[in-house]
Image 1 (cartoon, each protein chain N blue to C red):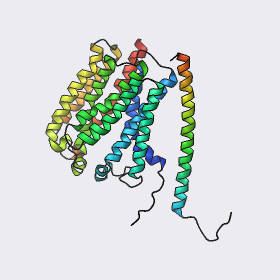
Image 2 (spheres, each protein chain N blue to C red):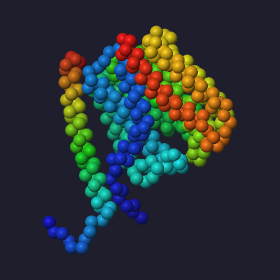
Image 3 (cartoon, rainbow over the protein chains, first blue to last red):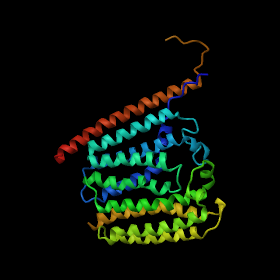
Image 4 (tube, each protein chain N blue to C red):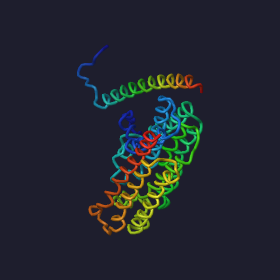
Length: 298
Length: 50
């Protein structure tokens, strides 16, 4: 039987394919990385660098949805995405994602420098090949290692402005890398049944909720310490140091009730939901303080 | 143009045309934006001597 011809893609579905909500955090941290750099490129170059990072994040998100459409169809949270819901065919999604990825990397090289373009390409490939294809369906450590993909943006923003890799953006990379596990595990605790239904070996599914809660607390403490490191090493001023210290204490304070909670019903997982929400706010305020520190104390 | 009496356009055809129009319009805007962006990047690069 011949399949009916697919409708041309609606631009809203192509836009949804890029995971715009995730992109907002990526763009913000990248912008902060760029604004915290010691040398400022012309406005249009900086704007293009951030645009490229946003497009690359969109490409990685679209490739992730293209590859995981079978998983997405099994999970309540993702079943209405454009591909599993049937609004967009996989081939269109693949063409769109690959085109966007190539375009972002080439434009980054033309506008800024080759190192930023290489890092941008590496971030897409890491998210797609290492996290999505290799780790996600195989190990409970998927989010720990895969978290590196989300840690690239401030580093790329910095490199786009300076053309080199310095210690400060590497420490920012480390902070986001260590932030990712408590952020995602808090979410995966209250959507555990979704991951179990899709057979994704997230930590709560494989190791159980008590072990996940302990890991959340451990990572929160390590992340809080890592976030203060730029100030302790004299790379930032007191605005960033003070903000990182207070936010770190708050993060651990939010993680302790999660470690103590024994609930298995998502309705009783208030501490997990609060930690998840705070973790997003944490990253926004921490990176905003970095820019404030750089511009007010410079 | 000859119009066949009593032949109403099918809803699916309308959707296809609307989406094609949207795609064409968005592509035109993106291409225009890209040209302007490349011009501004070139100007910035020349100005900074890179």
